[in-house]
Length: 344
Image (cartoon, rainbow, N blue to C red; front, side, top):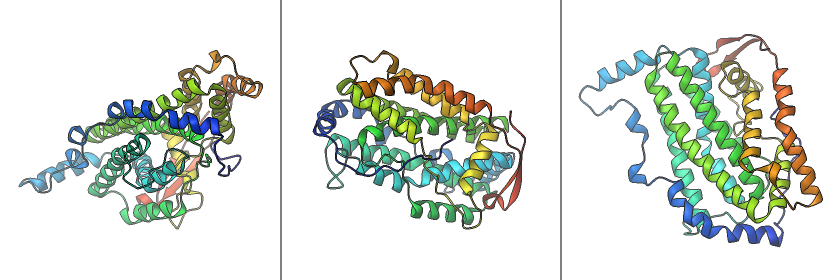
């Protein structure tokens, strides 16, 4: 469902589109302070982990490992996959800075878009750090295999099929931040069911960050809809026709074939991120941007509007037909096997 249909090439924005992005700078400057948390008020990875500098560090670590021992392999695999996705952050910032009008030309520019990009990256950076350290301290996963997968993923890169178009970029990030929020929150729920309350709270904290970032990108795209409704709805439809490529699509561990597809099957089986979630996100964005009520659209945009309003229902029918069974092995958990029951 999530494989791309087309590959877009870089092309310059029209003068009108470029003007829209430039005109949004005061709007972004006005909101960036509320969309990003001050560093002094932000959590850090060490807040959630055993304090190895404390005198009772061994007792803290023993208690931590005892609780982590209850996590099923299926939960470990989806947690590892989510962590690896977060750790490929360099690829995401590189992509974000390629979107026309949103770049950081000096690397320390004071433009609103550059401040947002760096602030978003700084907040996101904590997610991979925290989950990586958590998994390392459990002693239950093959960290070298995981590190190799991260190495491969960053080396392989990331192509969300937006080219350098900021309109498409805002649609993609609005969708993806919501998807990531759902995934982290569901992993946390699975951890809670297994009795691992610390991991539940960690995942909820990360999901809260993703929810705030989702609000930001939806707000940015909402402004595009106000300033250029026809261009915005055409971009939304184009992104949906291209289909959303997951950030870790190119993951590999040097051993398994189609590693991302295997991980996706386990995530679907565990209820962490499913075809139904993909469908629900489309519907949520259609509602968020009030697609059905847009007026004064060009003929092409009106066609795109009609397409978008019926898209969630069509995907829902596809999601209901998904079935699979069998088992999967992952080097991340020392090649232990995860059995998958058939889904209706």
